[in-house]
Image (tube, rainbow, N blue to C red; front, side):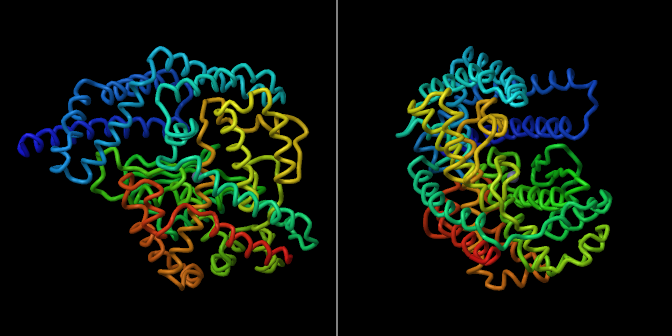
Length: 505
Ligand code: ZN
């Protein structure tokens, strides 16, 4: 028996290795397409991507895959398998089910609707015309509801959507942590807005030479421990990090000469994503487990470096002189305290991607509440604009003048990404939970940052998060580190302490 299982296991691992090779080729093509591939090559490149993607889809749903899953999911076989194989089997099985349960024709129709909707959305957003986008959005929501019907759901239908991005995290948990967070954040935002103590920020928007920003971005990536031997830094309109495999993890950023914060904090953010991918165990290469475990845990890593390191006072005690040296003199008469207050400014914004760490989660909670109500059939697509505006006013005290800066602002719904937004706020929540746990093990955390000794911090993250890739689910990572569940209290504690101190209320 075990001889037979051993052989099937070997064949299965060779098969998933082949799938991963396809995946790596596709990732590299995606990186290339977003970092300055020649425009004339778009047609050929999309054809190559189409061919490889459909081959990969075939591999994931083939008779051969069905055979492996049938044999290796058998209880008697499981006892003989390594942990890596067992988890790989589970991952492939999930993918297999998902790909086969949705009828092919319907899925094809959906993909066509997706690509059409993105340009409709763009035009509707520019014209601030929700009615123009409404028919597409209604169809997308209908498709999603039907897909949930095919896939089945555990409790709330929204759970099935969450499963794509945050496996194992369910609506009841999110309702609880988001509800608590919302109720704590609203008065805090009000306190900040009404405080008479506001930062001076004009010096943030003075010209900061682009070459100097480039040099600074490189230095800071090196300092936090990003391995340039296993990566590179390029420039794009929409910055991102992409893990092809742990030995090839690439980062992009963008430079704005009138606002150095975009590249500086953006690079640290993407660097955080990259550190995660670079430090996944090499044993997982070639398996379906060799990437971050969820969108939320990924975001916890980028946010940890961006917020808890890059916006730590000690970080600026160490790096303010370096920044001054690279700038064109705008900080010369600005004290470190004033600079620190300025880069931590909080101000309610209508636009999610322009918001700060204090107000950000409220933008997400608003979207989550609307998405969930849509999926449960409690509201209709046509209700979205006014509900959006009401919630903006209730949560942030500001109201959009038109739908272009309201319900139409984000691209996500135009490609059917429902269930994705919660990951962003979960990332904040996780990062604060990780930070509290980390400080228990490394009580000299602030000192380490002040002296630029990031190795112990990175090692802690590698030991507790990075190395596992997809071997552990998000809730398992949080439980193993904190001994408890997903909890918004550490984030609230952090924000309360920081913003009451900065804004003196
Ligand atoms: Zn991110």
